[in-house]
Image (tube, rainbow, N blue to C red):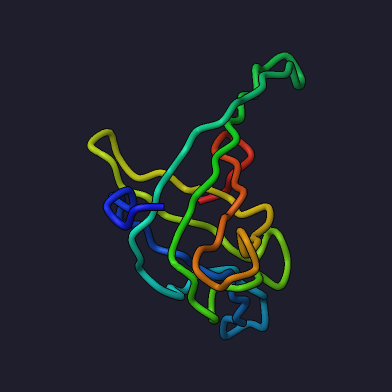
Length: 118
């Protein structure tokens, strides 16, 4: 892949759990890194859930290989934040893989839709 195709700036975040002063667990997000990426929307689906249409898009994101980005420990523990002209999108990371085992690029498989929590 040509480096010029990595034309979108994204932030990769990890879910962290902390406790408040009453001992209640709180979920928040911490930044792992901000990198250049190539974003591809590859498909989607809609389903009817409790009378409400639920739509999801499948997204692949390619970034240069960084050891700290490989692999996510659990699927719901990472997300990608991507800001567009329309606003900020939160992409839930489903999986990550080294594209050709050469430690050049990582592909993140993500979902973008109503199931993604911000």
